[in-house]
Length: 102
Image 1 (cartoon, helix red, strand yellow):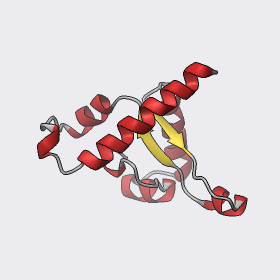
Image 2 (cartoon, helix red, strand yellow; image 1 turned 90 degrees about the horizontal axis):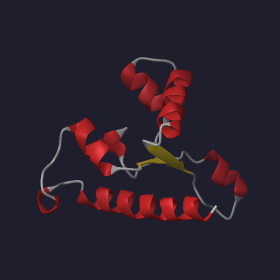
Image 3 (tube, one colour; image 1 turned 180 degrees about the horizontal axis):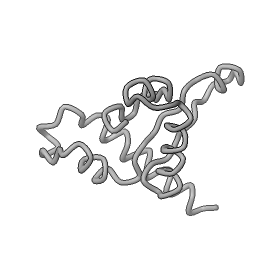
Image 4 (cartoon, one colour; image 1 turned 135 degrees about the horizontal axis):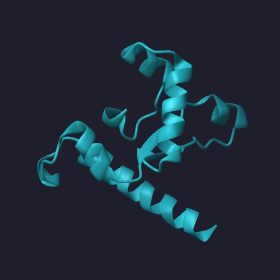
């Protein structure tokens, strides 16, 4: 999941990759969200049917945790995933601001 930063995440794909049930993946992701490690971002569409069908994206609240999972502490200017890291950072900061307003 850490490698799919900024991409839609398929529970079925993760379940097949790891060799567990889809419901187990959903439970793990729910636990990570409750522990404030990740958050899910739903899709947006003017067509509600499309919005419901689309997979969600998963972002890390702290990209340092993601980098630790991947054991990748390369400087930003040398990283292959810097675009995804920036996307994650911007969306995470926006999410934090949104939650603080509640």
